[in-house]
Amino acid sequence: MFVSDCLGLNSQGHLTIGGVDTLELAETYGTPVYVMDEDQIRRNCRKFKDSIDRYYEGRGLCCYASKAFSCKEIYRIVESEGLGADIVSLGDLHTALSAGFPAERICYHGNNKTPAELAAVIEHRVGRVVIDNLTELELLDRMAQAAGVTVRVMFRVKPGVEAHTHEYIQTGQIDSKFGLALETGEAMEATRRVLQMHHLQLTGMHCHIGSQIFDNEPFAHTARVMMQFYADIKRETGYLLDEFNIGGGHGIMYTAADTPSPFETFMADVSRTVVGEADRLGLKRPFVLMEPGRAIVGEAGITLYTVGAVKEIPGIRTYASIDGGMTDNPRYTLYQSRYTALAAARAGEPADHTFTLAGRCCETGDLIGKDLPMQALQPGDVVAVLSTGAYNYSMASNYNRVPRPPVVMVRAGQSRVVVRRESLDDLIRNDI
Image (cartoon, rainbow, N blue to C red):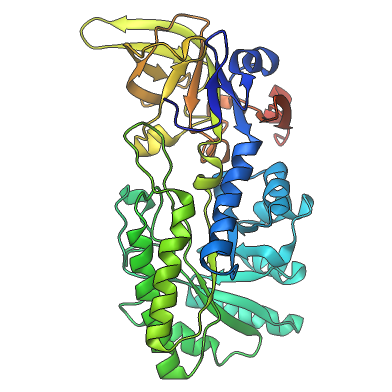
């Protein structure tokens, strides 16, 4: 019935998350409010970590992709579960380090890293830097030489694999702002260059083919392509790579139409390919890294709103206006993303009405979803939008000077604030 195991119904028919009544959460913390189930997040972490232990003899590291949801508490959680972290900005790095996250388990990404970022990478001894382009390669080498240190690096490679997903979140094909292409010889040229440098240590290659991918086969195909590239590098340079980072992109369930592969089967399919190809090509079996983000936190989160006006346009559609919108969830505006939405007080009843959830911003396109099957709604009702744990809080904005909602974490029937609601004074804090 629900898209996530952490959701349920109580004796009153109210939607619960982690066993906590969502109406009580809305009353306690106000709306809009993001709510995330810590136990679900931990279960998802363990599915990936356990799959490495089971199918690849523990020779790998699952790095949580911070762009999905970044705050101090999520770093504390994933660190305690033995994961690494994939980060992409000084803000991510500062947040992670402030939460006590070990720098040696961090992979630092980005297609245009600034000198300040690279200086921070060197200062804090970040575990791996994923280099995107030749300009960055030369800059980091000069900075590492000046600092008298050796930096462990990987290259981001475009393997030429186009995953079946939204064009804005496909990143493995040649026409992408990210990475070095295999087809043009660019990736091999970068490899030759770095092997001549004395302050950069090339550990392996990274690739990412897209997001919200339901099938494991694109990942397995990518592994075959990359292992062949590793063999080409060995043949042409004699250098053996130690690591392989296959990125993230594992899909989750937003609606009943979504059919993602179980997370725990991912490493079974990928390891079979990596081991088989490495052995066939005479390569050492690499240490494998993966970078799930949405798959860790997406289904573990919901957003609660309160309905204001309900406006019926006869013969066209019925709008239910909520006290949030594109400022706390821009994904419909960006990608026309689909969601499941429920009347929290009647979540177990048939969804026999249709509503378009309209946000409060001065934009026609400010919607959470169009023509959604839902229970009946009236002003004052609490609406729950499911699977909002990823790319909601992290992409939130202050458009129209709307404060960002708080993040509440639930565990074992208890709730706590992990990110405070922004105040009106917060909105003008940096104004002069």
